[in-house]
Length: 290
Ligand SMILES: NC(=O)c1ccc[n+]([C@@H]2O[C@H](COP(=O)([O-])OP(=O)(O)OC[C@H]3O[C@@H](n4cnc5c(N)ncnc54)[C@H](O)[C@@H]3O)[C@@H](O)[C@H]2O)c1
Image 1 (cartoon, rainbow, N blue to C red):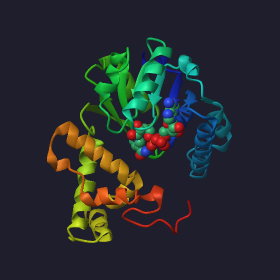
Image 2 (image 1 turned 30 degrees about the vertical axis):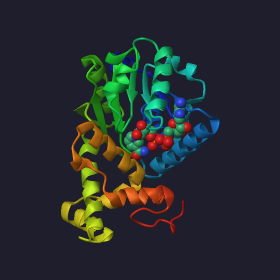
Image 3 (image 1 turned 60 degrees about the horizontal axis):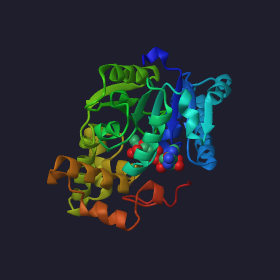
Image 4 (image 1 turned 90 degrees about the vertical axis):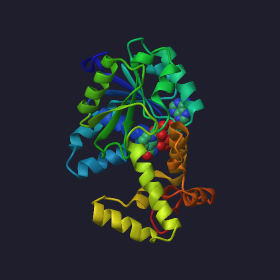
């Protein structure tokens, strides 16, 4: 599959990442089949896309006249068979191997043999996912960042089995979306989480050990290292449960105790303090409007 042959894309999952991925493909002129398991999840995803298009129009990034054209390119479906028309598929269902296995194997059985299957997983090995399908050479990692319409990076991850042609097409496709792809080999956490999670973990240890307050740790990293967000603020944004899960993947996959999740992170997760999404994490968000 060459990049120019790709006209129709399917996105599996219309959640946080799926609706963002569908948004950027539709805005770049692709027909997008957006699949989720229930109409209410599709409605929620389409509502978010509409809101985010609004924001782009207000910022002058999109003409009001183009809004209807972009929305018309989106085809919400619950029936997986509808993805048969897709040339390229991005899977963005929950980060559970069993869910991904079921979804990827079903999609694999429906897609044309030449279609490329990509996963947006944050931490599951692309080599493992590729091996679940009958198209391991046409399987690749395409790791978009949240929020997808805003963030320019796409980590393109090469499984052991990924062919040169599939990898090249995926890099070029990311460029056609206006993104900056970075080529990475498959390894636990890829580059993004391999480097970010130990930073967040160490920031949590600094708080646990009383080296500084949450605000002081973030202030040092923002003002001293020019980070736009402090690591603890970012951890709240990602979700502390997600951070702990990824640290476990790093520790299991790399076998190095340096990735051991900080007990403070684990305690917050046990308390249900998951960050922004639960209203409390390192910071409190209860005063903020949803
Ligand atoms: N949230 C992030 O910041 C982020 C960043 C990068 C990558 N990721 C990865 O992206 C993937 C999706 O994460 P998310 O945050 O969008 O999750 P989410 O829970 O917001 O969305 C997942 C969606 O998948 C749907 N779904 C469940 N089973 C399905 C099925 N069988 N077929 C189709 N849809 C199904 C759910 O209904 C839900 O709408 C995960 O692999 C995650 O690791 C997330």
